[in-house]
Image 1 (cartoon, helix red, strand yellow):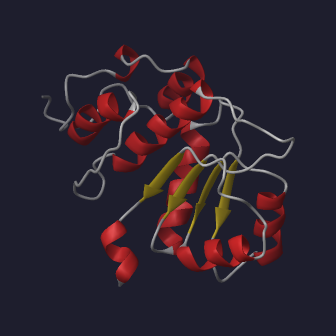
Image 2: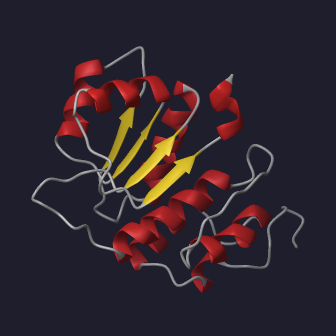
Length: 171
């Protein structure tokens, strides 16, 4: 373990799609943090993972990298429409926005489309983005439920569900 609180596991030693590796390089990541080193090998199998670590330890990157790998490895069963295949629920607008920024950076070279849904702003813009088709949908419970009830998207193509800060969903 280095003085920077990183593990000995290098991202380039993981068998990830090159487009994901390019995003990881763009983010300036070389070595996994401890939470990434302990969860990524499991999540990449794929297998269910529950992780708990302090803020700023790399949980978001861990679940996004695993989700992108899953999406690129398992092509959608499609009826011609692009429906979310990864669903990320966050308790706050700020967290949802940060996850989306991280997803855009890490997934920049993948060709996957990220959608973001949260209350308080851009209702029609968010709705149109999701209606036009996304691979990864990130949002807060209220706005996600609203769009789902309207039929803006379906959940039948979801391969991965992520609850970030799940304990805070009940606050």
